[in-house]
Image (cartoon, rainbow, N blue to C red; front, side, top):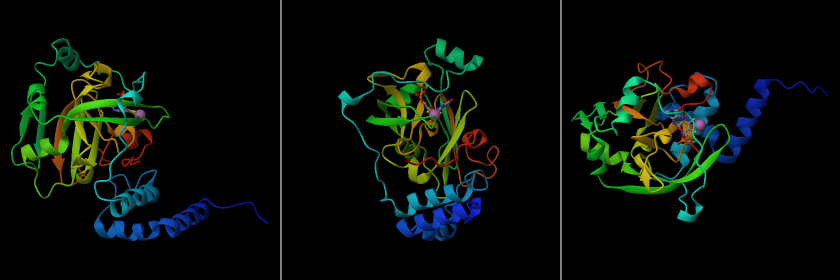
Length: 253
Ligand SMILES: Nc1nc2c(c(=O)[nH]1)N[C@H]1C(S)=C(S)[C@@H](COP(=O)(O)O)O[C@H]1N2
Ligand SMILES: [Mo]
């Protein structure tokens, strides 16, 4: 018997097996129907990513939560990915303790705004002890302190047309998440970590925490947030810097 199995055959077989087991085949059709097509669907992960994204959104209980841990489970060591930006404007903000830093929020919002760190710290405080898993294979548990992104979006008044929230950082990294993740109670704009202010290498003065997705979605060194109805005309249209490095836009876990 020939051992030569085409790639197509392997993929079809795998999808059929998964589809039979968990309704993913149905998800493929529903994804199209409900517009649950990730922005980088034409890329490396294509159909596989569409199926994962659609099945998470269609079949996972609305608002399901990432696991939270006890204080004694916080990791002794928290590795870093992506050192603080070397750009002069960031280094100057850092030297001045971020007193001049502002988070700009624009796009499909009723009240485009500019928040200082003190403004954000004046909003309701949310704490979570969650696991951050890097796609490169390491992870750690830490406590994150911040304001739910949903609260900030409510303050600026998000348009009903909004479908994605886009994030820009001082090191040119950019990311986006859909409204389901943006409004999720565990999605934070974090300014604190393990009981202190956010250390510079972990994203000072403000980072995103999306504990239901892999580490790279939790973008650090935030500068600007833009609310959009489509990612087609944003950057290269793939929704994030991740696809450029071979990773998928949707990194749900
Ligand atoms: N702006 C920015 N955000 C970033 C990165 C980066 O290089 N730049 N790296 C990402 C990756 S790949 C991971 S795993 C996490 C790591 O967070 P940490 O450095 O606090 O451990 O940050 C993410 N956020
Ligand atoms: Mo990562």
